[in-house]
Image 1 (tube, rainbow, N blue to C red):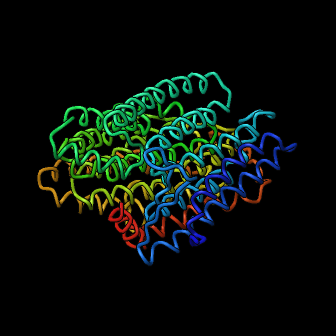
Image 2 (spheres, rainbow, N blue to C red):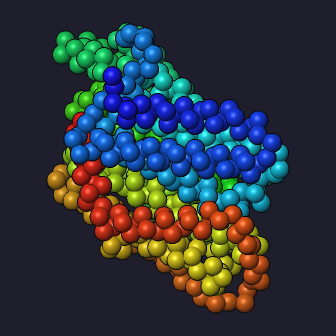
Length: 497
């Protein structure tokens, strides 16, 4: 009989899917909200138990769904890295929903809110499935679910701008999905398998015999480009600021903090469990990631500096942070991949903290979005003000905060590859300076008293909203002080892939 914790991944995914089906049938929007909060909290709780079970013994197990044999089987593969990412996804989804409830009920019309909660459950289910899956076709299925759910929670605000940005988001996302599907089909035609371990054995056999060298290179490129488009790697991230910046606060927090990272998690699993990381490096895919990551860091920072709309500024900043991740993946050293995942975890907490805090500060001044016109807003809600300050300082890279430790490990990883060291250091320095140039003035502005705007505070009538900013702030500080332990979990998980 399997240990009980082996069932947690399947239970977590099924709980999200079943909840998504039930929510439209509920008579009350508040009941739908409570169910959504319960499910995301339940996923975070189960994932914490799973993390506690697999980390001490470096346990890695495969859970078979049904009784279908290879090559068409459906499996979940779980280790410390997968458990950590699932915990982050569940917890941040819970906090993003709890912290953005007030804005959500303001932005989304009655009658559409239950469908928003349904799509949020589908999105969490897809993130968990992409994290756990050991099957390439299942990955594609949940990539499509994630695409449709992400577009739905953007367009839920139902304004001309969000409709236009959603159409652009959907078009580019479907292009990425199409390229990924072509890669899956070609890979199946060559190998006859869909399970990742069997695919790896077939690819290594073909490489050893010298067969299909060019098709395998093409397939790796298609899978990479498809996911790069969906994860907003430069130059594919032009859709992100309008989509994330125009959505309701909960949507912006989840899209920037989690959705982009789910695709990157899947990409790394494909690299390790299908092609092997050594083969990916020999095909120079990591070199492309490295260059695009560096350019994305600079481009996203420049655009964020030029932006006055506070949520679009945060969205441009996310483009730069995605650049950090891909730069780490492209350093051709194992520490770089681990540092990239630490950056993923840190950004998963920091960016929702910034979006939720900015959303609350915006509420205070009648939903004003101009950072200049939010002057003094932190004095009206010091919890949101402190949250925005901590998040901003972490993004700049101030010591004792998570952003500093992520940058430190990226620099340490860059030092292990002398060929890529100086471009990485120079770009990190420029990006850090640019971060300071647009985050620090924002922090100063919200704490500077002004008579430019008339405050109109919106009361928090949902008790959960007070939990989000403090918990996210504590997480940012924890990652800065004890992030080495998280880094150790990441390295253990990568070693088991």
